[in-house]
Amino acid sequence: MRRKPDRNMNSAPIRPQLGMRSLEDQAFMDVFRKAYAKCFLKELTIPLSETDSKHFSNEILEQTGLVIGWKSIKNYSFYVLNHLTAKQENPSVATLDTFARYVSDAPKTDEISRKRNESHYPYWYAYLNGLSAVIQTEERTNSAQPAAVANKKWIWGGLALCLALIVGFYLMNGAFRSENFIDHFNNVSPDSLSRKGWIVNEIDTVFWNRRNEKYSFLTLFTLEGDTYPDKSQTAKVKNLLLKEIYADCFSTEIHLSNFIPAQNWQQAGIVLLEDTSLSSKSIRLTIAYNDFFGGFPKPGEILIQAISSVNGNLSKPEEIAHFPLFSNEPGKETIISDNLRQSALRIEKRGHRFRFLYATGSSDIFAFKEVTSRDLPITPRYVGIFGLRGFVKEAAEMPVYVDLFRIQPVTCED
View: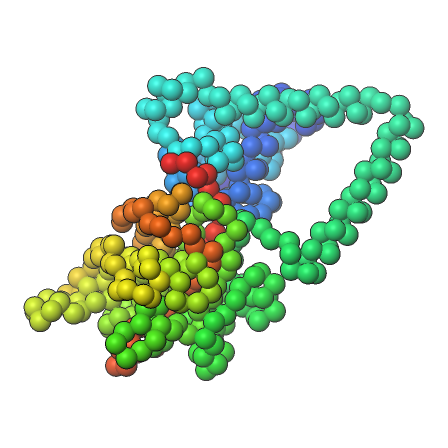
């Protein structure tokens, strides 16, 4: 339950202004805001919901290997936004160190390793010392003569104007690029997609014009085509959305809503490419349907599949993961639909090591699970999101509701 501020203002504790607040408290609020901005790519303006708090907690766990409970995160968000009246929050040094590790892209660890090797919590104290230095510099600046301060304001104002003009120039020319990117697909107009850096390949006008048929989602379809050729067909994926990758090491993911494939080879997911063509080296990760078992009588299955092609389309691709999620047996329809109301796929690249992860849930995606990891000699420069059904003509063009896409840089060390 969200904490409410004390309505009796006379009995509420008197809190100093930000400049008089303890350095540790300032640093806590500062690191929390930075961690929130890193996770959600926006500034903290309202207290976190339970769903967002769980997502935030999961993101911290995925990157750092350490746990901060979602309920604590929810309480912290309320305190940071209402620190003058809210009940004081006193996170442990271990928690503060975890936040500092998250914002600084520290190598992944676990509680046992941290206690053994870093029990002095170096990331938190480095963050604290850095903030202290900044505050001392500001205090020295504020104590300067008024005339000098006024001159500095003019100088900084001029520099800010120049910087704004430079940034505006780069934005106008498409040269200003961000390695952190998230899209909730609240606007899927051509102009909006183009401004965000999306490229659309192999447009199928009929189905592309239906991309906004579900509000606040991007709607794709499992159209005929494949990222790899077969004996009589060339590789093609209609309405393939591509985004350039600017980081050498990164994490990218896609969130889907109610995607429940039921015919061969309906699937949706992520593809990594070395260029914008489908003839380059590639890796793809999908949620897919399969009912072909070489003549053996088995029920169809919904699975997580990962395929790589280290030689482009010069040779057959390799299936590096085939992980069944559900067997499509009679009577399991409700269980399957409940568990696939929300689903997500993630690929992480560090050096040449790739991790493949997935998550499913009835109402929320809490934790990703690793399917497999593999060293692959591929340097992807584009990430794509898509729906397809292979070259099977009989399967239907089912909708793929994309709720979120994210790509962000990560440390290249494991």
